[in-house]
Length: 601
Image (cartoon, rainbow, N blue to C red; front, side):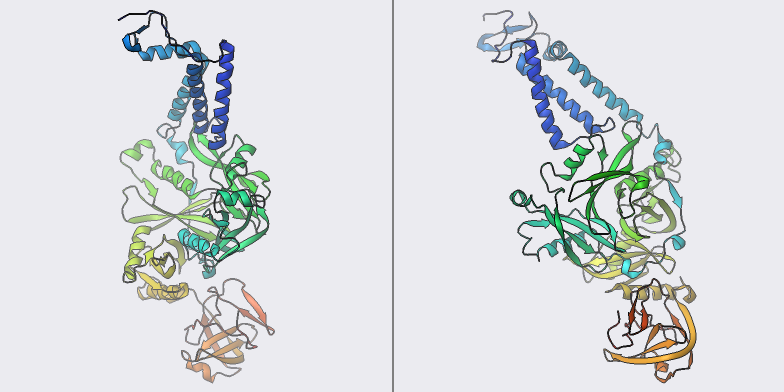
């Protein structure tokens, strides 16, 4: 073996001056960094962990480039060449690598080490063990009165679909449009909102593939899909001008990339697609802030409203967000903040040991529409994860106003199992429950789906006594059966159920035969409402005459749904049907025709 001291491997061609090598390293680093930024879109914000990953990536790229352009020359006396050309290193490779970095990349090495220190320190000072009170107060939870706060919702406002069923209907509707189905598809990026006073899900359509994007990108996406959560009707709404900004855009018009270039320092939650009251499409991008330490206490400070057609954007603080926007806070964020609130109620130590009064949310959530806003609903249970709830949480997803309602009872999962037990012979599966106020009782409303993902039946389960279950093929029949069940069990008294009475002289009587049954329509003196009575259930109606004094018991009128027909006002009850009171207090659900004989609205 012939030993050669101070030998070094030959290097390839490249810049020979130190400055030239540094410039080449910087150019390569910037090019790769620009590509990384364009793809990953990190926020240029010191509270964003993505920023530290990005800067760390740049440092590593520069160091690798320095190895390549400068060659790895070990110090004199540290290399030997053995037979066969094998190079051995005395003193260990790791030391030599660090020496090389110190000599060739000292500023970059210092920056990389500093980043690691900042991340570690920032993570430590953000831990709940040091900031338990701050984490607990992320969510301001007020106690509420369920019967008073959660009014009995009109049945034309109750969503009868869950998200998967709504998106299935939206996707199926796209298949009926021959001029779109070959070029576009249902995106699935749906959001539940209130539109026109009704709960709906809206979603943009998307380009079917990259080729379809290339041929249609000039005009943009020509439509979006609305699925009515009550009637289960899906509609494709065509736009006069296509949407240029969406998630299906691969380049600069991708909504996340468009927002990042407009607001490089903002940390965003995933933008939600919504429409305003005029049907114009928008992207709502909540702005995330960290309120505890460097990385802890995730919250929302405002939102960027981006027009999906023009790309024009406006940032609004929370107090300035317009009322038509329904979702600023995500359900997952609210649940995370409540879990901090419930677990740290008596400090960090208690959350681990003892766990006195420690609570958490249940698995899953749903949405409920009230007062032209969308509320997130989820149950609250003890940390022991038993099969009972302590109460419920309702949070306004626009304002973050949150209330807890004490209502001990079954968890949502237990209610689903109870409802499925009533239809086990049909093989229906229960969706996640919706919380309703029926006769002052907290009640789980559960749509039941078949294997085709279509809703075929409905169940109502009493929260306090989840063995009390009513199932029917329509919402109205289900509510009637459930109210009767509550009364039969002594949970509610007749006077507590939704009803009222009117008395007066009969001013006018009309009759009609519907489906083989005779109905009499009474108008009392001083009123313009016609009350429909079934002769089959109320034989006394047959012998009534104008001038007779009667007392009529009927469901309360809720809302102002009415139509003017032949000079008379036909008022609909809270179920979307005509009040059908009777002299005996029994109501027939059939709608009344107008006095002119045309169908009632």
